[in-house]
Amino acid sequence: LFSFALLFCGVVQMAYWRSTYQQLVENAVKDVYDFLYDDFTRNSSNHSKQDLTAIHSTFLCCGKNSTFSHYSSVENETCFAEGAPLKDCLQAMENRATGLMAV
Image 1 (cartoon, rainbow, N blue to C red):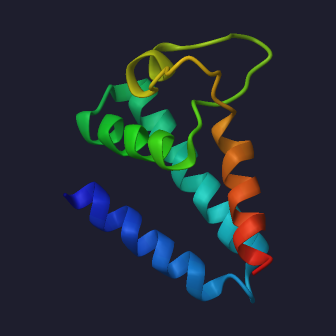
Image 2: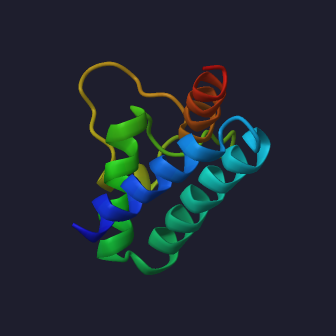
Image 3: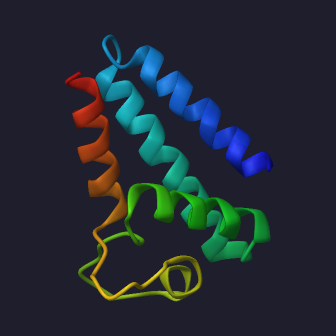
């Protein structure tokens, strides 16, 4: 429930600032994702896992694209594979933020 409230507040804030602070909003969303991703990598936190799972299902993405490895334990535990390969979350967030800012 806390994860949903946090995500909802982030979406409301992103919608409010979209016309003025496009780059700032995009970077903030990516920073939150990076923080959750790193926190789960280091601590395997259940809260981070729930938040990452919610982000992955919201943005229809999975993890970070890395040239050094394909999937890590983060992607294996928090992504939903439904047949189609999911895109990199940082790129998906950038595309979504850019699309919202164009409205």
